[in-house]
Image 1: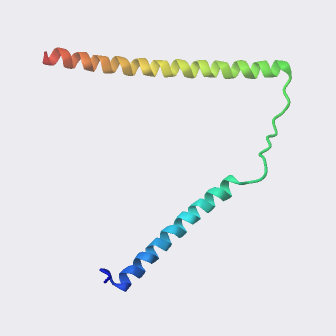
Image 2: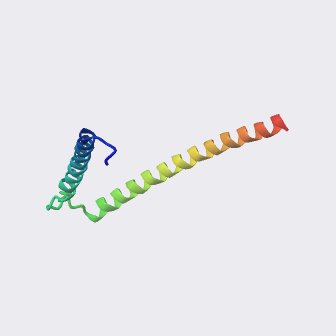
Image 3: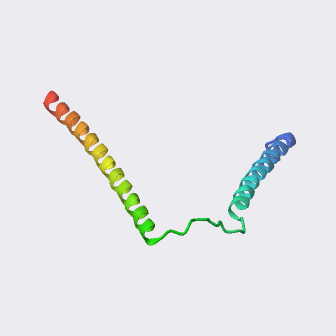
Length: 93
C-alpha cells in the first residue's frame, strides 16, 4: 500500500514538470544566444606603418603604466599587512 496520497503525488509530478520546463527554457536561451550562424565582422581602418607603430607604442605605454599602478598597490598592501603583523607580534610577545 502506498504511503502518500494521490494529490501529493500529482503535486510532486507538477513540480517536477515545472522544474524541467524551467531548465529547458534556460538551455534554449543559451543555445539561441550561442548559435548565431553569422560571424562578427569588424570595420577597422587600414593603418600605415607609422600609425601602426604609434598605436603599438601607445598601448605598450598604457600597459607599463597599469603594471606600475598594480605593483604599487601590491606593495602598499604588503607594507600594511607586514606592519600589522609586526605590531601584533611585538604587542603580544
